[in-house]
Length: 59
Image (cartoon, rainbow, N blue to C red; front, side, top):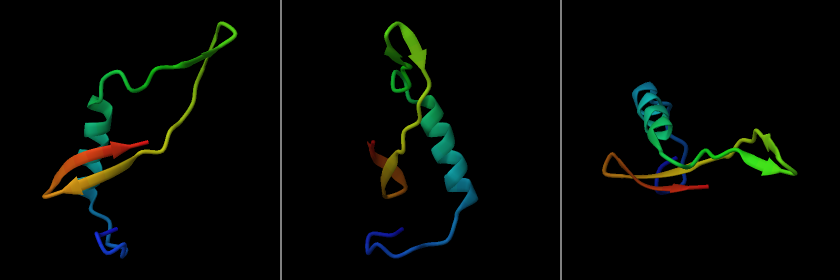
């Protein structure tokens, strides 16, 4: 999606770069714990990209 909220085509290189970037984030993927048991979970992330670089990661 561009800044005018219009859909854009898929870019495989960008997808690969975002996946590598996400995997490199440190301390963000802590397992949840409830009553002494660790539980898996998932989270959607939104990336704000300006001038070809990630400027914000929003949960």
